Image 1 (cartoon, rainbow, N blue to C red):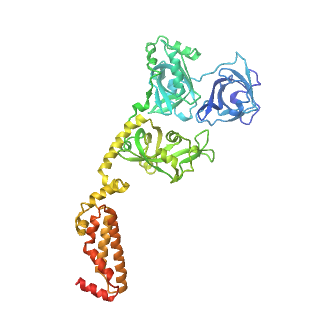
Image 2 (cartoon, rainbow, N blue to C red; image 1 turned 60 degrees about the vertical axis):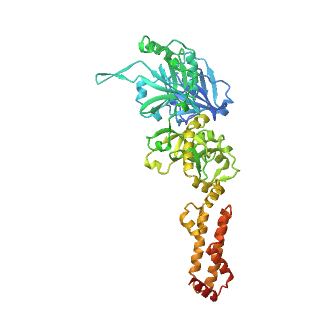
Image 3 (tube, rainbow, N blue to C red; image 1 turned 90 degrees about the vertical axis):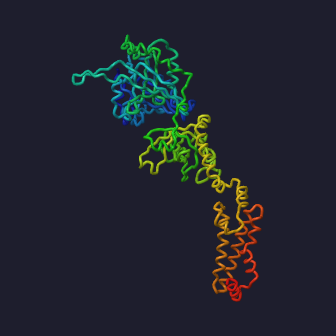
Length: 560
């Protein structure tokens, strides 16, 4: 190898004149906001003659200027690029740096049959099961026999499938003891990788299925280390003529337990999908408060939207980080009620878009805004029955003031109706039990209910005050005011001015009581009876007298 080429391990951000010769291990496009027609960047993983690997990015503007096509397996010479720190969340290599290509970058394809192939970084199963820092681990490759497969699970925004992979038995001698090491691992395929796997399964019949999963990511599930595909970078290859697959077949040749798995892969039926909504176990809100931390489905009605004017936040267009100014994304707190209890839930952008049908920046904010929430959002969310997958944390400190985060929502009508009907039946029963309270609060059939009650009134006002506990607030206030007016007249002082004011107030109060009763009565019978009462007669006499000391004496005599 000519010394004119720099090795990847020797690259440094301070040097911009390096020339490298590399082979493309993986090349994949990253779409903008999931739109396959709008490519945001081309991401590549290169290896050099020594087998060192590095990640490289070609931005949208750079792709327009590159004259050659970047293809996996081909060799290229490159120069005029930048070396920068590798801060990727899921690192595709262990290299401390990554390459950023610019419009000045020069790329040339070369044919070199002697340039080595280091296309895979295979990790044995025992090493995977002992990984300690899962988040710091770079993506790696695995090869194994598919000994079992689960069904395809369709979720509202995702699709997944689990495979059980097995390798030959690994043994290790520790303290002179022969120990059998881990030789089985669960691999989860996501989204397009499910379709890739099923398409390749159809092409191979009656043979042991050997699979290679490139750039998979480790994760911990119920205390067990598993692997899964990682966004666009992963690649699934089944039963192809790769050297790694052929080597695997030689190692397991004649092993009976692998021969028995020839048809196991075909238990997967590509056209028959198992929907997560069909197997969900829906809990009540009251139940999940008592369960262990985890994810649970609940069904509830959105009763209220909490707001301090913060129904969205500003975020980067390319990631989920909060920034000063880029675009709006939803972040809405809702109060949800079911037949057992209620809870405050936090809906993030993905779930809100699914429920509202718009992006945050598309919402019409010119319409009436209630408590900082646009009317359009309230119309879409309030009184809506939804299935929520809730991330529960039931420690006391967390529940004190934090809403529960929603991981997924389901609004499929036939699924939601099945669970919402139980809530509606319970609420209907509660509504019937409190019919009178509902009538007063919401005005349903007010005239009819009041007319029926007025016809049952006793003849004497005093009896009404004592016996009829179902009088509406207006009747009770009118009766109380009338009695207060009577007591005020009986307790008059010798002060003529006070007497005059008291008489005027008493007359006005009684008139108000009469008007209130008259408005509540449908047939006028009750009002007619009221005019016959002694307080009404006394009122007429008061109006005819003069407001002076002489009248006071007369009043006293009448009392005696």
